[in-house]
Image (cartoon, rainbow, N blue to C red; front, side, top):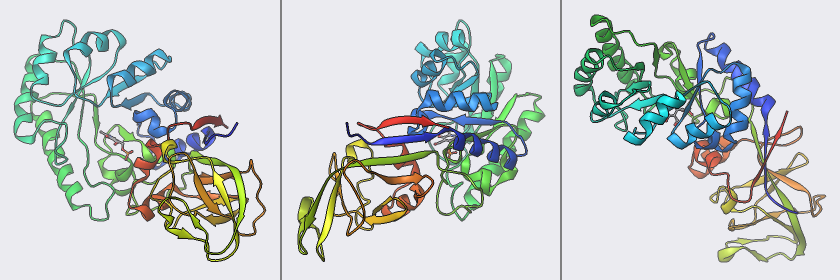
Length: 363
Ligand SMILES: Cc1ncc(COP(=O)(O)O)c(C=O)c1O
């Protein structure tokens, strides 16, 4: 049977984790495993990280947290989404940490039978979830007076992975101002976190006592504007099988729109992986795959279930698996490079791995 494969190298994951931990001088890492661990498979990824010593996980939805608990992950889990009344009792019972991120959430926690733990999210410039700066002081006073179960305070950078870090520094200044206020009113909060993959590299001075890391763990850089000094290894190898080969004459058009034409006699292979499986559809103008260490151009537009490759006179057989992105002993194509070429991001491409793609875990 033919199907696309995402081979997940768990040793590479552990390698990346240790490297980042060293880079952070052992400040604890909150592993961001939302969206199925960025497409890698949340349970397997979380178990490896837990065995490596991770004590904190972050997901986006409450269901993602429940899935981790059901799989036996007993470590701390922070849920990034807006809390609802229905979550509170279950969160308390399952020891899941919620996100107080809107002025209306305060009432929820005040009225709860048993208030679960929460982290207070402050908006310092992302203008997404998080209490605005002009309201946060009042809310902190309420948290103190009502003795709410606040275990952490955090914010999120809007531009941490950009070359120009002035806006990130402005966000950090605001956050620090708030921390001074906490000190002034004698409110001790156990965990303080702001950093993500971009700032692990770019702004190590914003690490505090917990660092939320996603993308670097999976072996990609958050953008092409951060230095690629850290020797992380891609965790996912995305491959597709060659299912058909045919000789074609120069001038033969390939795929929808007939936008690609063979400029000499060649061999066209059909690979059974399409954009419905997560193949980045834009990756055909300059796109290529790798087989046994050699790169071969993609021929024509990517289809829903398949794409075509110009193999020229390469040695190739039906059943061969081509590397779309990732790394093995002989082939290497960085998802970061594909993202750059097609004006996308590694986040979009990795979380887009789906459809008929089978995940296989190797060490
Ligand atoms: C609130 C929050 N923190 C941390 C992260 C992790 O970011 P990164 O994958 O760049 O490390 C994300 C990811 O989108 C996020 O939304």
